[in-house]
Image (tube, rainbow, N blue to C red; front, side, top):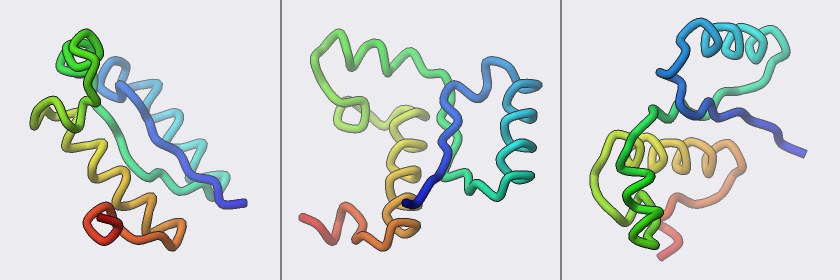
Length: 83
């Protein structure tokens, strides 16, 4: 079973992010992406929308990149190819 990591709100505590990153590399776990803390996520939730559909915020961009990298990692098509 493929395993990968995404570090959410990585910019809240850089020391912890570095520890997670080091642990993943030491244990050969690929990091698919880092999603920053972004108030646009809460705004999208309150509007009942997906953050990637809500706006072009930093988190939305990071999540799109995360999906594309994960799709490659899993051998799937990107979102553009699926539609």
